[in-house]
Length: 340
Image (spheres, rainbow, N blue to C red):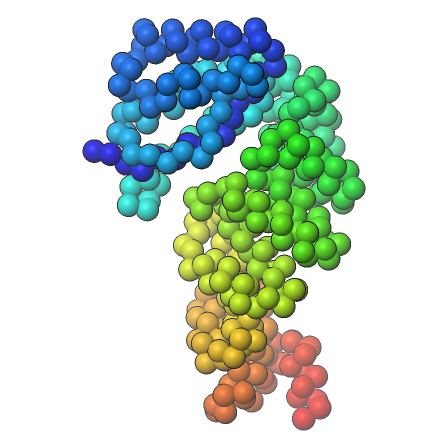
């Protein structure tokens, strides 16, 4: 049986010797461990001597599960001779993810060890400075390490060193134009300084360089909607938010905690587009979400918007919703009641 498979990314080698060794071992594995029919890609497609890389632009094809696993195993083995980079590999059956592999160098090379330790440290709250030190060591040993620049940029962003973060994200993009996370990071910085037009370009690149199977893709689409709202492109924002709120995120996804607030934003945008009746339906659906992780919106905010929609549509219940929002502590609702 054949399944939809997606491959994309690149692995870099720091010198011709490492590149040649990787190619030699790739050939050895193919000749001695795998049947040629089980390997999806020929070496001519993968290896680029002029750039000292293994590269796969986004490639979508149908493969057997066995061929997928064989190819992933071969790529994972060969990547260990590399110095930086990553390859993402997915297998999908009728829209559902069957298998996923994230391949990157994992060796005893100092560059690799410092990067991997820095990457892990970057996930620990309060360890930002330690992560930066490790990532800086990796960069000093290999100054084209796009992933290390991106991780260090994220740490600088957390520490509110925005100038340093933007410099790191730009360096990451310079050395790997496919680094979706670096575009996202730079876009977020531009949003902070209210440069929504420029931020929009970086977010579009994040979306283009990532897959709908990845959380980062939806993170970028959500932020893109925010930019479009600030730019008063409500039609564009509605498009992005509509797809975001329809997406069924796993609870482990950071995007899941933005579902309720995105429904509120979608309703506000729909009202701006003259679709107040549809906005009201979305607001009612938002109230049905009972999830303690929905930290970015209060039910009082939703009741206030419901009151406004109902009043605009001439429906009963708008005053009750307004009073409920005020009772919950919504300052705007309190102000409206006081000035009636």
